[in-house]
Length: 506
Image 1: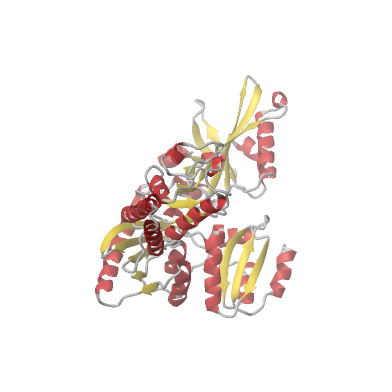
Image 2: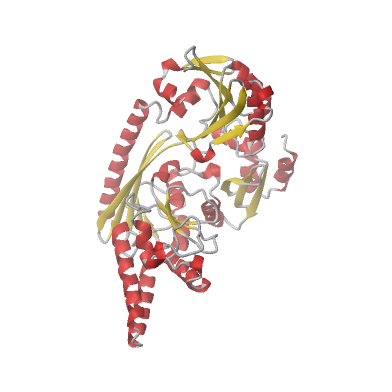
């Protein structure tokens, strides 16, 4: 074992239940797991890797150290693991990669004056996320509707004077000191309480305040609370935020190999108010129960009173305790054997099977869902690269040399990662010299990709191999018309004319 720190930590592991946190060189938690016996479980990652999946080997190769928490029993370990995964969102615990297609409501609680936004990603730390919600939740309509009840800011940058939202009563304008910090904080707390499932309590509170103001003949203040109550009713009716005593979610999944399809029906006030499908194709670090993996990641908020689960579920009682704690009230998980819930569960399962068949069929027809899978197969990479960066060098008549980087995440352009590099001493550099400078600077910034593509052939690839160390590098070879015709990797050439999907992607 090369890492002496890990070797020492393994000797300290107790034969007790607990939770372990794998950390990378930046001390960022990349995986959280639970164990009945910490010594046996954690040491198995480092002592015998022959039975590990490719993804597990990849995770272990990036572990710089680990920490552990000793607990009294397996239930405590389960509950602690759930809480840590929810708060830390480690890279290798994420199973539901495609749930980003559904919107979340984000409250930037880290800010002095928190704002409210709609987002499809949950990567930002120190924010509260609520959802996922139906696709009709949008910045244009949902945020103003929420602001009508909770007038907090939705601007990205605070100005020094009130904007239009203040004039139309959608913001308290803390930027211009139009409200006290306490009043703004109370409004944010009320919003979080509402989004966390406290609708009924908040409605009762507003009704009480409205009545008190009316009794004191403060009719303008009474009207204020009346309007807030009406807004809460409208929001609930429009976006299925109500998780009262009648709320039930019915969940089923169908699985074939690494293909999994979940089908969820949301029942509110006795009728199906919405449905959702989540398709997953991913090799997991550990072969855990995908049902409980789904539940602990899907339910951040908006938790119903009852969850009907079609499939058998491990750790059901522990999951009920955790969901109840998160929701602030009792949550029941039912795996029905007969009766009306069994019929609902069977309906959900039938839809999950149909969805899975379509998902697998589409996968076969579209080159493994994403050309990234074709790329992985062509280059014979150990794992599917989630993050790919491509580099090119350009100049004007041998001078004014610049470098450029594009970044793709899970086969999709991530323009926040695009960069332009000014080349030092550009007039004296060849293209390969410039490429070496760009990659040398890039390797110092961290958050490295899992595959690098460079414009050029073996000369360009060989020029940077010593810089990028263990990251695979492939060259994009051009023909006489400056059109990419092939990839070179490991001294082999892959003709892109054989795969139209991959050619277009490259």
